[in-house]
Structure formats: C-alpha cells, structure tokens
Length: 302
Length: 318
Image (cartoon, rainbow over all chains, first blue to last red; front, side, top):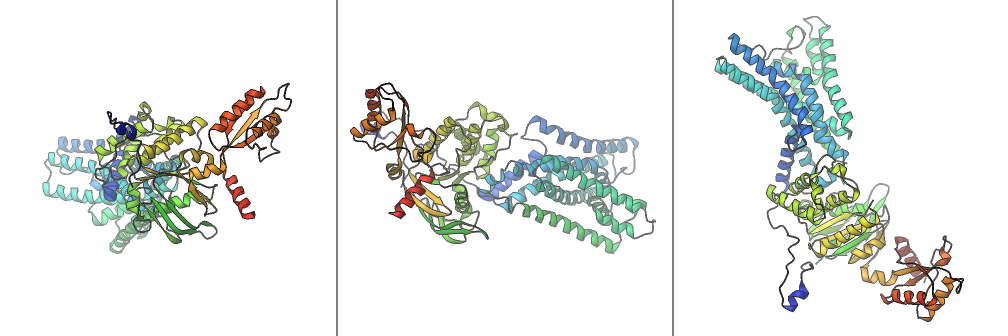
C-alpha cells in the first residue's frame, strides 16, 4: 500500500491545474552500504586529525606541530647539502624517536578529538543505528589515527630522503634507509595509535584524555631510560628493561631489525633472544590495545 | 502490509523482564508508542534496529527479520534518540552530511539531501552555525533531520518532544505529522504522554512493564477518553456558578461531572464533559453566556497513561 500523501487529490478531481507536491523529494539513488560508510568515516577522521573540515581554530595546533617535526629534518638536510657531508647527521628512526615529545603532544591532541568526542556527546548511537557496525567504527577510527600518525612521522623521513639525494649521497643506500624508515614509522604509528586510542576511549572527558596520553607516552619512557643507565655497560638488564615503555620498545626494534643506531645508554642493542621478545611484546601491545578499544564499544550502544 | 510485526517478542535481562511476549502489528502511518519510563519502549526500539537480540519471539521490520537482516533494516530506517547526541563544535550542515554518508549516500547526494531535509524541518540560516549555540527546539530539529536525511521508509522517534516548551512541542508534533503526510514516511513515535500522541498518531499502542496494554486506532481511543474541562466564575445572580452551569448543561442533554481528582485544589469549580463531537463546545459557550457566567477556561483534557490503567482495572472489575 503506498503511503498516503497530501497530494492535491481534490484539485485533481476538479480537473484544474494540479499543483504537485514537490516539497519532499524521495531518494532513489544508490545506497553504498557498510564499506563505503567505513571509508567515509576513515577519511573524515583522518582529515579531522589535521583540522581539515573543522574550524580554523582546530587547524592551528596540528599544523604547528607538523611544522615542528618537519623543520628539523629540513635543517639536517640543508646542513648535509651545504657541508657536503658523506651521510646525514641523524638516522630516520633516530629522528622519529628524538621527536617523541612532539609526537606525544600531537597524539594527545588528536586521539581524544577523534575518539572521546563521539562518546562524550553520545553521537555513537547515531552511527550504530546505521548500517555501519561497532567493528567498522573501531576499525575506521583506529586506521585513521594510525594513518594520521604515519603521515606525521613519515613526511620528515621522506624530506630527509629527498634531501639526501639532493646532497648526492649514495642512492641505493639511502633508498634502503628510506624503506627501513617507512617500516619503522608504520610500526610506530600502529602501536601508538592503539595506545592513545584506547586511553582516549576510556574517558569521555577530553582534558583527562590529553593528560593521560601525554603521561603514558612520556613518563615510562624517561623512567626506563633512567633505569637503563644504572647498570653497567655489559649488563643484559638494559635490553630487558627496554621492553618497559612504548618508546624504548620501538627503539629496541629499530636497532635490532631496522639497522638503526640504538638510543639506549652505551648504545646497547637487544641481542637475539631479546629481539624476539621485543617483537612479541610489540604485537601483544598493539593487538591488545585494539581489542580493548573494540571492547570499550561493546556497551556503547543506543 | 505491515511496517513492524512482532510475535511474542520477549527480552529478559538477569534481573528484569523488559519485554514480555509482545505481539504487535503496526501498519503504515504514524503510530504512537506510549508507556511510562521503563515500560520497554527503548528496548523495543533497540531490538527493531537489530542491535539487541530478543530472548525469544521474532520481529520483522519492513518485512525484514531483525535477527538476520539488521544492516539492511538500518539502511532504510531512521532513528532519533531521546538524549542529546550532537557535537557542539560542528555546524548542522556538516553534521547531517556526515550522517547521510554514514547511511551510505554518496557525497553529492548527501549534500543535496541535507539541504532539503534541514529546510523541511525548519532550519535555515542557523544551519551554518555550530550546534553548541542552538536552542533545544533547534537541536531536536537537527536530530530529526539526521533521522530523515537518507529518505528512510520508517523512522523511530524516541521521545521527540522531550524538553520542549508547549509551542515547541506543538511544532514538533506538527512536523511529525508531516513526516508521514508530506514525506510518505511511516513513523513510530514514543512518548509518556498519551494526550500529545492522540493529536499526531493514527494508531496508538500502549505498553506497560513490557506487556501490550492496548493497541487501537486513535479515533477509537479518543472516543472513549476525550473530554473537556470547564471552569466558570461565580456571579451575584448565581453565587455558585459551577452548580448553575451543571444544571444548565444537564438540561441541554449533556452529562457534566466533577473531575475525578475531586480533592485537588480548585476541583470544586471544575466540570468535565465527555467530548462526543465539536458541538459540545458551542453548547457550553451558549449555556455560560445565558447564565451570564465568565468562562475561565474550556480545554481538552490531556490524558495520561494512568487513565488507561484505570479504565482497564474498571473493566476487569466489571
């Protein structure tokens, strides 16, 4: 049975000019469903992480921080070009690790914006009353956060690669460094997006989220660094201690597997068995953070 | 054809039974779902959207099974939640466009439909301003717009008049009526006020404690329950104006009664009359004028669910 409309039935009966009810137009076009909605949510969240599509005010901080991570890379490159150095002063992974405080601030600004706001303003029911499901929502948000962080770290790495080529450094070697750098950035992004995303999902309050993320990403890192300096250079404890914070974990992975220089005290590197432990802890942390994030939304229904 | 059909639908939580063998058959049009807080209205909506499995029984929405075709249902159904759900730093346009895309509409269509829908719900220049500065009425309109933007065949509106002042309430009820008459979209609207649903709905379903109390067309409903309340002044000629009017009306063939809450303050000056048809208003006016009494008020009583209970227990006793 077609729904009744306030169509001009009496007018039509009188056979006079019919004023059609064009007030409401129905939609007959395509409905693209779940995967499209997931992609749209990903794009929207990724753009939002840089303030695109949001107010001018919310563009300031991400863009400023982005400049802060890119400018030193440009300076390193400029020095290499003018001083005709044989290699860049700082390796790719090292560079990212050095800028961890800036990355921490960026994540603390972006993750609560991407994740806590929907919880705080109870927008999630509007998502879940649509074809998109909890898993899609979490996947899109996590992917967007990871991608934003990846761009944030990989662009300086790319700047250094281009600069190295301009400085006429060895092409093969530099390309290998670039590949290692990109892999490092991807691993770094996946882990940190998971941790920051989970923390942001725990609290609907933006301020708490910001503070909690900065604390989680910095305090353990400096604590472990301090602890590592206590035992002597020959101690194996240094390597095992490195498992204790996300920053030192990433450091151990890059020095064991991605050919970077270790930032640990005395330049210690995790040895064979320890290296495997680093990878295991990495996988455990990343997958764990993702599962916890998904779990957080199990109850966030209508 | 039915829009929503449930068959002995039950939802039990460890401690409470939210829905108890509810069997419903809802046809196209505006259907009011009335129940006190905790009667099971929100639980029913959750099940209808395929977001919460029923403990037993089946439910079909737009002829699709809620258990197996939840995603397909949610593509063609709109939902307006009871609580606030709008981020304050986004404009209505941006927000509704995003929600349209979440429903699967391509970018251009999402923008076109957003502009149309916001206009239909009565938001004009405001839609370019962040929603944080909106009044409750405007927020409710945006919430309605996001439920309609993907041109659903059915919308579920959970307490859409909550928090609105009387004028806003009337406007919202008129808008809901138009969703069906002008847009051709079926509506299931919940409220805990029977009176306001009487004016918008074609059909009314009353549930309590998860059980179906009553399901009938609005006309049938109001025939039994509609009444008006009259209050008049006393004059020198008639020191007890209420009693004089009561006699006059009885002579005119009506059966005025004292209100049921007889001990309420001022109840002694009130008369209630069954509203059989519109001529009752004229009779009251003429009677009051003849007696020279001042007509303080003459209003249609708002029925609350309590009255349905009363009627039911009265019927049980008989």
